[in-house]
Length: 171
Length: 276
Image (cartoon, rainbow over all chains, first blue to last red; front, top):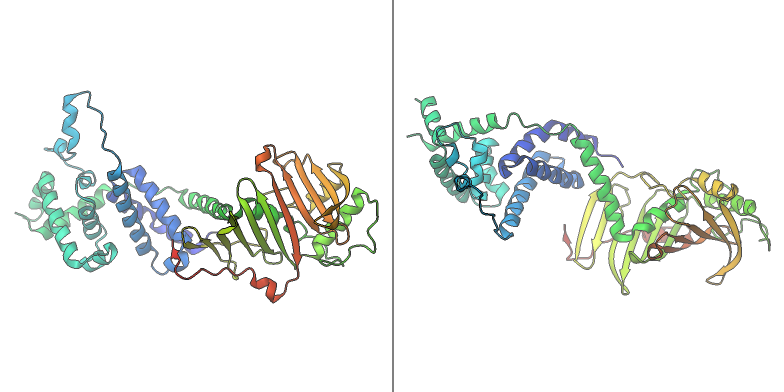
């Protein structure tokens, strides 16, 4: 059994970019790799349908899978062991521990609800338009704008260094 | 206070910088290929696992042989001897399989692991269709489309179907089995690994019963093979596994490659089934 050469070329050229998107959607490198592999396999199995716009196809699958994964995680019983050190409680908010140092936005994104996170990644990392994002997420442009606004507001709160840095850059 | 546009622009730049060190594995294509091969075989297995692997390899066993003068259903020899030896059966069986290389073969079988199944294969193209049954009801069907590029799988229980692109050459990717290589059946029959059990009736037909054992690729104690006493085409195989519950019996019907018989390979998705 042979894999279509055009699919091989596509994976070789675009898998790194797609892995980065998967990482931002999940916040975890291992999960991102699993997600990408699953998405690419689904794409391979529907290559005839996907080959005209394979990147969009994979991106769509990634978005769906990342949402499903979050739902699965949410369905699990929330049982967390007590921290051995009371100070460890500070880690409940990943952004809080990073106050005063350069924060890693990819990790702070995890704090956002999945839809807000998807919108932020698609709009500002993938540089998709509001319309493209709405199509991908299967919602209205108004909803995308609303998620964008709320996501940015939350990030503005969490990413204090980004505010300062961006403020200097735009002065 | 930054505007949302300014903040977003900076956010995008920072996300790109933070992920610049992330690269995909150089082995990704190979990993995907391996996963896809596993998937294709799993799909086949979901319908009639052993039937595909074993029957395909069985019918493929004669493909590379020199075409003979025996066609399915016609006598391989002028008269079946009442007492034959292993070499005689070997010569005629290999010749019969070669001569039937453009015919269709239908295998019906049962196995403890998968229940009842039926497999029809076009030997000249490798196209096949298989159907699995449970409690007398068809539960799943699978098969290659006429262009050999897509495998359809229909699940009648879930009312779903899927289409998987594949590139399969006739007999390509078939797991090794005692019958996957014509040379192997010859070897098995000639080097003492086969014994002639005798003449027997299978469903009223005169057959010659052979027992093959000790083949390195065999997964169990051996394979019993019954060939038609006249045409020398296989009539039945019984795979005797190390664990009795995994044993399997396949009964073969050899069909002419007519339009009507080829139509049996077509798999139609019932209306209302959901694609998955």
